Length: 388
Image 1 (cartoon, rainbow, N blue to C red):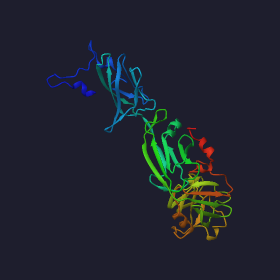
Image 2 (cartoon, rainbow, N blue to C red):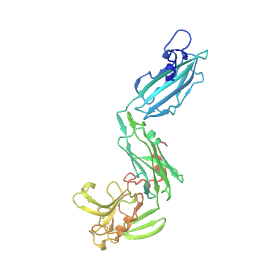
Image 3 (spheres, helix red, strand yellow):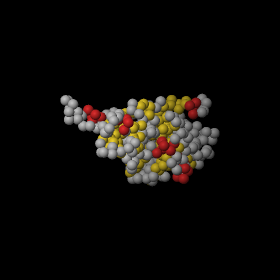
Image 4 (cartoon, one colour):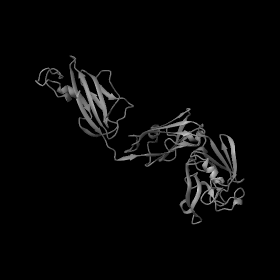
């Protein structure tokens, strides 16, 4: 439409008259556009409107111009032809430039055109969701998709709607909020081995809190590997490892001592370390221990529960006594041995595998301590969604 205003020939002849008959009027007198031409800082909610007092609008095109790509804003002309507005589900992008091109017909069928532009507001505050697992990873059947946000989320329903979890084969996946900064997703039961899971984020320009907008728009995914669930019996000092429902092995363990017991409940492996340092002062203890070379360490909770190799306890401890500060220990050698029970289990473990502890003299692990959401039943889990 911008080209129509300059379509006369070089000699001034052969042009197309796009003015209405009678007194000459500026295009704005015929077609009125809101926001005004050249406006800046327009809210994402608009309002955007094109209207005429008489005649009718023939066509209206509102386009977002961003990174050389043009995205059209869906909208409709009213039945009487006097007004155009965006569809209710159309949303303007923030920090974006828009062009408006409109053509109107008068009662004699003559056209008038108008071209305007405006720019939406550039927000001062943005929020980001950090999520696990990693893109294209292969995980255990207990993996929970977990988002941690860098700012408190007030509009939890809007943010939850903007995250879509799909799977093949399909299964219902529901979100659960833990406070204002964490949102986890899981199905009713552990994932079926071989499931392909897709995670689609459409958080860009979603208002998570007053004046705070999302910035991410991406698609990631992961694959669910074989099923491995290990049952730690703190009283019997054993761990039964099941692979795809069959017992793979039963290994001796040591769990938390009477004054520093291990949590009961279902926990999910979230990190794997060939070797790591464990300092009791980082998890609320005093100076009872500081071991700089703990081998074959598998994190189970954010509060510091690990399943790890132990080379400092005597061999007869495993299977007979609980001596740890809350972790589950497997016999190992200094430096880590692939032939030890800890090395054997470490090499067969995926992030997302489930370790369940029973018969410990402690409470059940909290659902938000690590990926402990499997300790809630399905009804409780769904009640934590902002969309229900």
